[in-house]
Image (cartoon, rainbow, N blue to C red; front, side, top):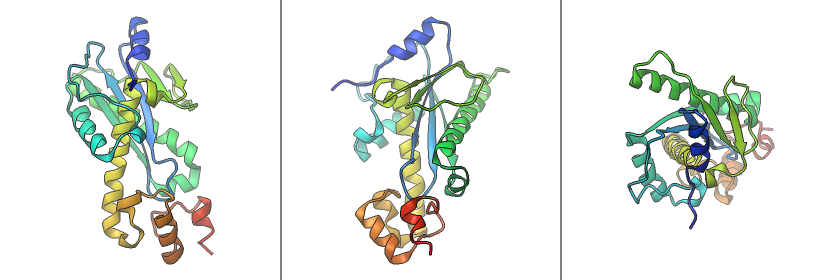
Length: 219
């Protein structure tokens, strides 16, 4: 299996961009819950010495493997990361695309705060962004969008894992409050079980009211 590598990061490191950040999201498609984005910056001296650190698009990994990789990534001394979250209420207000962009901006901001605190430098600026898909952010930061970046770029794949595991944990907590819907099993995605429960019990507070399958059940 071919795994995401550092070829994109290395190109940018050679051009003088030391703070290269990969971004990806989790939760654009579900009918319930927030959308999250991960922002990951790898040190240019980083080497994959740990054979277990074979990241990939989070959708290609089992839940168990995602959790294992998440634990390694968030505790790695050569990796810095940030998370951005946007609620279902804001998604309904500004639409899912804009909410995804907002989540990415928040992830970048939170990463910047960590950099400033950890490195004890005045600057918390990010040098270059690599984004998954066709998304462009209205930020004064150089950036590049790559289709299926989470399959190709190490930092984007890592960001996808961190975002996905973080979101799954949120949905697991919601499952305890909204027991009827089975969020523990489907995490808010439009599975047969979720649609069945949605039809039976009607939308709850964390359902995205602007999404058509939910919208149809509001009246």
